[in-house]
Length: 575
Image 1 (tube, rainbow, N blue to C red):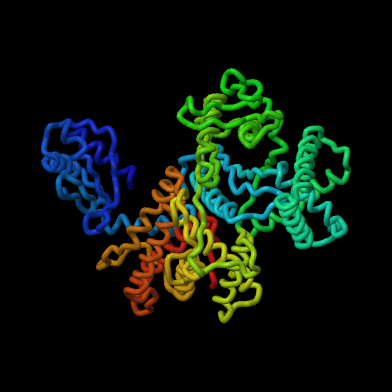
Image 2: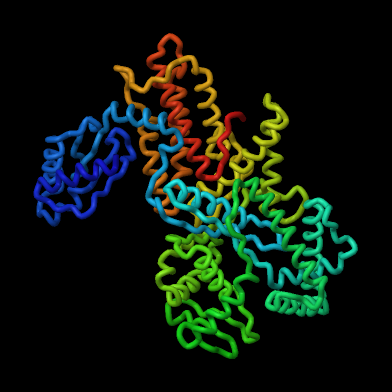
């Protein structure tokens, strides 16, 4: 409808002797002011040297000469706004189309034929899966699904640090606990616990024992040398490194499965380190310069800050590896059209430098790069603490939310298998929606009670609204779903909201803002609950009205299910 109205307004403006450059349409906050509104008359009044309201009247006069049957009426309001009221028949047609197309109704083609890369989550092997990784995963997965919704061929990747001081601390701990080194046949749980214990031991030794700290630093150099050479003088060192990395990734895969994520590529620092170093060396005197033995990018010349791209020992820090990573993505997918990277907002200044350097080195590819950052997750005071007394990791937050979710559905008439699946889906919905309802760059407050509510602004509330709709459709399966609004029917708010679905999905992608979709789904569910509460949906004594109400219910369930899936939240049929 936005495209149709844009053409109608443009044609009317031209007929009135005006030359509009851009048509801006929006939905009035108050539905009594119409379904769409444009400020075209106010925008052109100065150029036309006319009163905005008088100009609006001229444009409306032209529109009324060929009024579409989809438009009930057009009015001028206020200082010169033009308001469009759509017809009952238009909304009935939209309901019919949604019922016919189901989840496909919301799909667009803004990225048809294009390839989009998404890098997100980025946990480091040998270290825990933190809450920041959970936030990055939720946002990155939602953005990648929004791109898929618009027809893109999406490639997902995650980038992890398999070299560095944290790895040296881990392997130091592994050597001290080698008597308990897991066998190949041991469970992944046992292997993960061993890694956790080893890291705690290594980190404590580094902080408390100067001799151990020196030993760990030497170990760090050996690991870098081993990775560069492709072999190691110490066979145990390579075994520890390879086993620890493999177990870490297998453990991350368990978490990804629960979150509904998968990745096309795992890229590690060890794979991009040499390339990053090479790029820096080749561009000394062009983009980089020497300073006290190190190679730096003088950011102050670009309104940024200076960063080291090669240390005085010739080692590549994160900055150089980032360039290697960029080149690796181009090597894997040379024809990609957009590349999105999701990181914590604390890396914003760092990424401004990286983005500038990339634009100097690879100007054409840099135009495709988009950086999205996320804030911190904080907890409602007194509402969250690890039951084990440890730091709350992303994994422990998932586990503890599952415990709370299980308690909420414990008394429901469900099989044990259903309870297990629903518990996991509800817990993930609670966390993901809490993250996605906010603009990506903002900090969020996680309240376990509110996030799991079936009655408030939460992911489980959306899931429950869908379950209720499915229940009504099941109850009314003997009644024929009617596609035509009854003669006396008054258009409802839920119909208006459903007709906007397509443009909401598109806008959420173009603005890289999953919160737009999350907010829409909440408003949509609220509208459905109001619709549900205003009168019986299934009434055997009035099958005509019930048939259309069931059509609306079916359309609602299709749009909500598609929206939840796009946010990475599992649509449920039972709760």
